[in-house]
Each structure stands twice: as C-alpha cells, then as structure tokens.
Length: 243
Image (cartoon, rainbow, N blue to C red; front, side):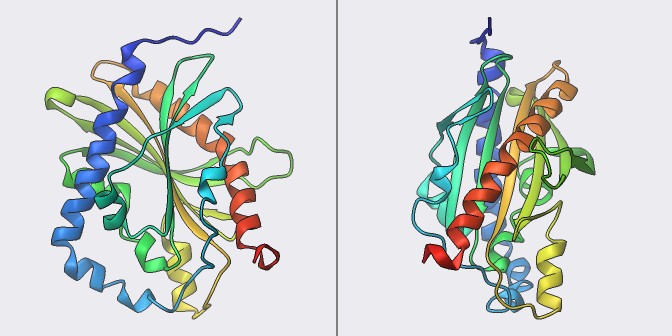
C-alpha cells in the first residue's frame, strides 16, 4: 500500500526556490539592460506560433504517481519573465512523498526565453552553483526520444540553507536541448518561424544535511515522466489544424 508522507522536510524547501527565481528575475531585469539588448537581434528572426489560451494548463494534474497543485506566481514576476504562457506547479510523489516544482515558460519570441536561465537567476539571489552537467534521461514512453537536459546543483547558507537541484531544458518543435544553443542556431541560420518553443525547469530541494542525490533523483524522474505529455500538448496546440 502506498504511503504519502506529510513531513515538513518535503514541503518547506520549495518556497525558497520560488523566491530565488522571482528575485533573481527582478534583479536580472533591473540590471540587465545591456544583456537583454544583446538578444534584440533575435526579435523577429525566430518566432513561434501563439498558443491558444490555457494550453499549458492542460498538462495533467496527475502524472504517474505524481499529483500536482497549481502554485500561482506574482503577476509582476510573470511580466518580468516576458512569458506568453506559463505553468507553475508543485508535484508530490504519492509513494515517496518527494516534491518538485515544475515550471514551464512558453515564448513566441526566442529572445524572451534565452536570458532566463538557472545559472543566471539563482546566483543573482545568493545561490552558489556547485555542479552542472548535460545528461540524457531515458524516455518513459516506448519509441520516444531521450530527454537531453542540464542538471545544476546549487547550495545556499543562512536561514534557508540547503540544496536546490534544477533540471533545465528547452523544447523546440519536439527536440529537447540542455541550453539555448538550439534557439541560437535557428537565429544564425535565419530559420524564421518554428512551431513552438518552451523552457522547462524541474526543481527539487533538500534541507541542509539531507542528500542532494535524493533531490536529483526526484527531479530527473519527474522530468522524464512529464516531458511526453508536454510534447504532445504543445505539438497539438501549435499545429495549423488547431487554428
């Protein structure tokens, strides 16, 4: 029989990570005028189809053993990220009690997705990048492509001391990429419009003293479990037949 632990160890670490993303975004927007200007050449060169309203909300609340609950972001934070659509949820594994934060940002313009990266936002709010590596996660669906992503581990001291593990990737017309290189290559080649592009982050936290390996396993496991549904939903919404 499955157990659903209610321990605070699994429930409290997510909030500081949300705060880190929010404050990191504000700092970057306030101080990164030159950084943003560096991406202006992408505006109008690489664009995706606008999504019908509520597309990302169609991602299932239940994915395997994971049960989700929406975590609304402050409107000012959403505006700062320049997202055309976004999804913010916590998912809990009913069997283990592990929790992750699932964030998807959809952009019509490539330049709006590229600057908002974990290796930029988290250090701006005091998190220290410990490790990062590109990994290929095996697909859960038969015949599906591997999920190529970047796994970053951050640490932080103080009142909210602990570790945050972030699985970050981009989806561009069904292809996964661990960084913005696929978007950038489209711009260099003058590829013009594409069907869809989104940035995805799966975050798991561990309080100080807990194993970061356990948080990483949870983040990677959810990322592999959720990418199939996300691909199908975005592909269907961006299809010309859906217009």
